Structure formats: structure tokens, C-alpha cells
Length: 73
Image (cartoon, rainbow, N blue to C red):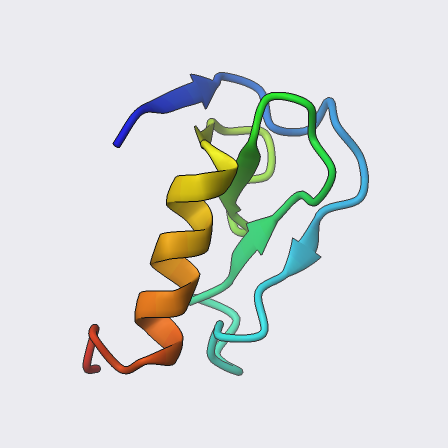
């Protein structure tokens, strides 16, 4: 899996909270759709911090694994 980092995740707009994030404000993951470099993912508590950017294929595999219960809580 190849991942890249965007050092300042506030530049792009359109972030959305993942539907799999908990209701607790301390466990929010945000993703950015339709980004040309892949799928950026950031911690919503640190919007000025870095975001990891995954390839679309790798992100799709990860989301499928989550939905299939491969990462039990």
C-alpha cells in the first residue's frame, strides 16, 4: 500500500465525517472525496495537521474490510 502525506489538511475543502466514526467527538475521521491524488484522510481534532492520502484502490479495499467486520472494536 502506498500512502502520501498532505502536511496541511486545511487547504482542500469538502471534508466529511466518516459514517463509521463514533459519536464521541474524540474519535472522528474525515475523508475528502474527489481529490485528484487519491483519498485524503485526517483526524477531525487536528484539521491543520497532516492528512494521509491513500490510493483510491487501497481506500476501497480498506472500506470493504471495515464493512466486512475485519477490524473488530
